[in-house]
Image (cartoon, rainbow, N blue to C red; front, side, top):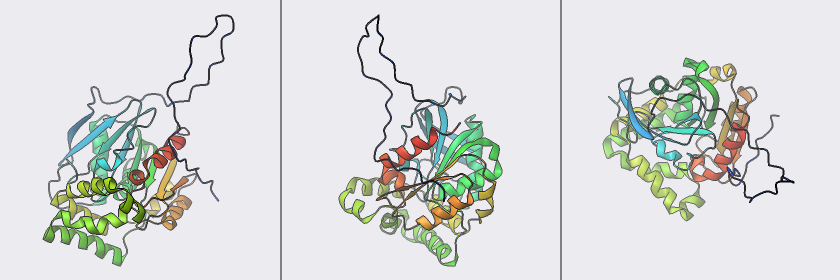
Length: 310
């Protein structure tokens, strides 16, 4: 049984030590500094936000922090703002993107596939001169990440799979995703909110955290019709990525909400078993949007694991 990564309740990282002047004859011992990854080259003059034309789409991104690049890819039908509370990771320049058709990114058409999202994200790394990075993906973003690794395994220092699966969609699930695309076309993207929110957040959070409900609802409403239709159909037709799992040779973390009813813990354990040496962090009290719903615990799990990535 692989060792479970401890779940922390809060981010326990300090970048400063308290203290005053020290006596000249009896200096106090200094605490050992936390090992941080060496900074990696980034695109010259990389802005904190901007757009890049890649693979026929205009891709919007935000970047925060200093250090090695950590790229985060959202799920359906969300945007990089899913990660609004995950952008402060010590030693890393956290980059969140909007996939084509979502958030502030544009999609040239309604045609979409997981494989094409992957080509676009590798192209984004090329455009931003990110030679190698730790990359994380939530749900559809995790499926995209698997195909990115298949395309260019040499571009990754580590992988973070968040509430996702390597399985293809079964008949019933495929019909659900195609139904989402059809509903968006007939009734508008905003009509997806009532059905999606109970899958993103636990019942407790929906009752007690109206700000979380509002934030995720607004993200969904911000998706374009091209994005909602293309993404739904892409999820329905996604490839079987299970053969990719045993080929993964870089450090890998799996972060799953313990109450996720979209990609439940059985799928988390299946992925962990398929990826040699991978670590699994289950986030208590979190549903499918675990990195948002319980951001402090998810951040703590990522920070602890990132210390082991060299």
